[in-house]
Figure 1 (cartoon, rainbow, N blue to C red):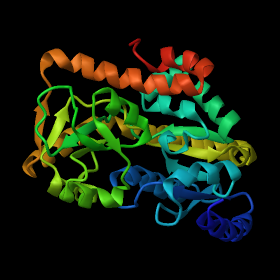
Figure 2: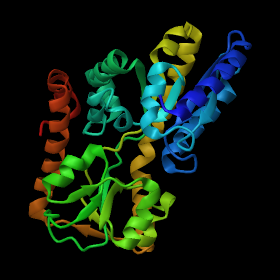
Figure 3: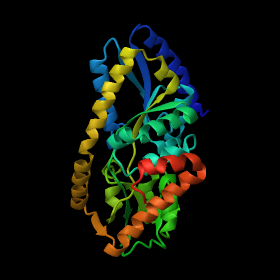
Figure 4: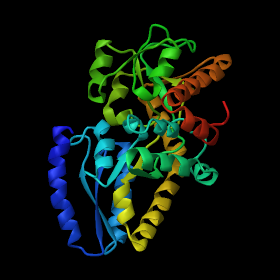
Length: 323
């Protein structure tokens, strides 16, 4: 266990003791894997505020840290071990524990449909079995990743491009000829400035949170994948909830997932803001769009299939549109 996790664990023991004093009220110790001023923590903050305002005597959420105190890729381990009870994170960060979690990013169906067709229940069960965690809610749905670049793009062949990448789309970048490089978010600005990378993969929202618009010239259209941010909970903590606490939490989950309906509008507003900042939208040739998107999903599912072939075979027809 990383030393920061051990330090937090000691702190959280005290927090748990304090929570027990409330009697029927349970205190959930929570972390966010994203900076508290970024878009992908905004919905989490609204959720915490709502739970704490309406849950007096039932439930309280105590946010005990963010990426500054717990590295994002450690959140899954901390959640599984019960160091924290609740996390605003993404399956991308705990794919080492639950490789099937990447199916959430490859989802071509909205969360409401996944709840209806059994996809959510299946992947939640896999999370419980492999990660000792419950997949509570999806809090981004319909947003896409894009390739942002400082070199003009003319086709779906990115040979010669050095692109900052993360594991979830590294294989895709390789399939279109690019050289993926792993660069921490805090170093991307300098990497762009010095030409270490020609561009990067990132959601349609969030470029301004990191100041990257100052070093970005183009955004490639179309986007790919379905940016996934979710709430996860330690399974042991979930089992301890009494019926009233569980009903209250499920009501709040329904509310927060309903907020996803505004994601597409936010993405369009962000793209307009990017245009004003000088980021030009570059559309791939029409005859190459389908190939570009197909390669993205083929590479993504191949990774899940290699890690967990039996579960991938069950998940793919529920999450994909049959590519």
